[in-house]
Each structure stands twice: as C-alpha cells, then as structure tokens.
Length: 198
Image (cartoon, rainbow, N blue to C red; front, side, top):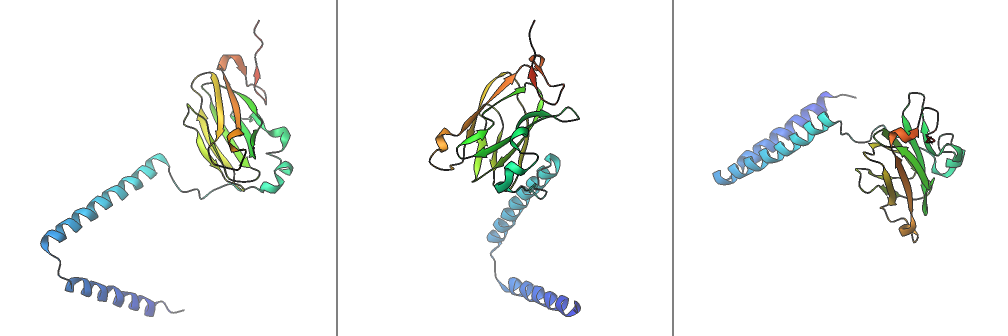
C-alpha cells in the first residue's frame, strides 16, 4: 500500500480548509472572543491532563474480567474464600459477591486504621456499592472485578448499601462491616480473629 498519495491528499485537504477559513471575514471582537474561548478550553483540558498524571487517574485499561455465571467454580470467589483474608504480605483483602438481593457474606469484621482492599464481583446484574461515612463507592459490573482500597479511620458499624437499582428487592440489599480497633483484632494468620481479652 502506498502512503505517499494518501499524505498528499491529506495535505491538500488541510491547505484547502485553511484557504477557506482565511476567506471568511471574522470581526476583530469575535476573533478575540474565539481566542479567549479556545484558551479557556485549553486551560481546563490542561488541568485535567496534569491532574490525571499526578494522581494516577486513567481509564480502566487493565480491567480484570471474570465469568459471572461460574463464580461458584472460581477459586478466588468460591464460597469458602469470601470474607476477610490476609495474604502472604500481610495485606487485608476482602472478597465479596453481590447478587439479587444481598451482599455475600452478610457481615464481616475488619481492623481500623489498616489499608483494606475490597474486591467485588456481581453474579447477575449491575450493582453499586456505597459505604456511608467513608469515601468508598463503586460500581459492580457483571463480568468484571471491582477493586477499591480504603481505610476505616475509626471503629464502628458501617452499613454496605446497594446504590444502583437492581430489581424489586433493591431496598433490602445491604450488608454490614464491623470495624474493630486494631489492637482488638488479630490479623497475623490467614484470617482476622478477635483477640480474647483477659
């Protein structure tokens, strides 16, 4: 395939467009407002690009997919692996499944002041998960793994609510996270357990 003829055609089209634009009479005041508008648009786009680089914001290009129809056969999201676990590096990972009309498991205990990675999957339809009094809110799309890392600053009871309409039982879809003081929860093994006070 020859690229030179295509390049020449593109150059001719751009020249023709520039010639037509120069032939249009634009009043001096209009030209100033067009320039100001373009500068403002460029400024805002620049802020978004710079902010994306500094805060690591990017489109989800490395999304993790999963077969929603066979979650029960999946090693990571099998029923025995749901809930709070500690990996080999000591990171606290919570695996939960959203399905009409509940989150599984229904209740979990996590330590306060500890980074917690929440991994969510949907077994049926689109769900949203929101934990009031925190910055945790995300969409759980069927076929994809939603992962959010957060820290609960203080002990207490935190409800987990579905904030995306998923059917008639949507208003009954909830779960509960008990955040326990760090010194009262032992996460040294594969699972977190309450310490027995003596």
